[in-house]
Length: 289
Image 1 (cartoon, rainbow, N blue to C red):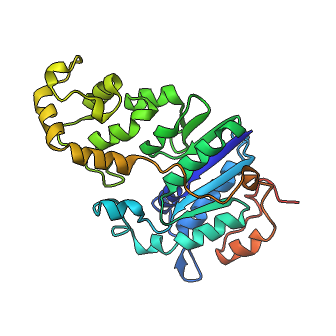
Image 2 (cartoon, one colour; image 1 turned 45 degrees about the horizontal axis):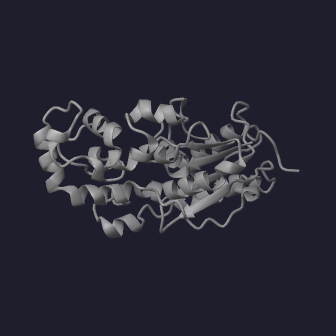
């Protein structure tokens, strides 16, 4: 048995900005909502994924506790109003499909995905975290918790994370602290590129373990003296960035694993999707009994 955990916020943005015409229903833009719903129906019907237990997490609103600690962290200020207006609507639509929805306000969707992954990993054969976000790499565990990029049809187990980023999952927050994460508004430290950071962290693992004296660096890094100086001068910033990049893994989710079981799309979903002017008839892989 697998557990599928989906980054709904990413899927919503992807659907909104996907090629193709806009879509309206009842005088409002519903392209993202319908697009994400199609994506979830395709996932449910994918024989290779064999979905039995599923949850979709959303940021609603985009802001979280991280904005309180770092005002430059990502927020909803640059998001199109037409997309913001669908945040509640898409949760209603996904829930109508019989899928568990985790709506995050204090925490982020990624925190919920990470919490679910580590909470239930020992109760399933595999947890499949479906997102492109690099920060979820920190919860990847062997081939028991894997990260799936549905858009590019790529899967990352622990070896895959190392190949992708050059560091082990436990070092991913440190990696993002130094390199930065533009998607989340984490700037990183000047001069620290991906290859340099991978070299340092593959050797020492965490920020605080990197020797302050570059003369003690027994790995080859260009500009070691300058980088060591930067790290020393901005260590507090780097530790804050790591804090921001570290997932909260004890989000208070109310569900048990059994609550995430998907038993087919309820017939009542037809009414919900009629309001979206979307006919479910040919898209539902299985109806609930």
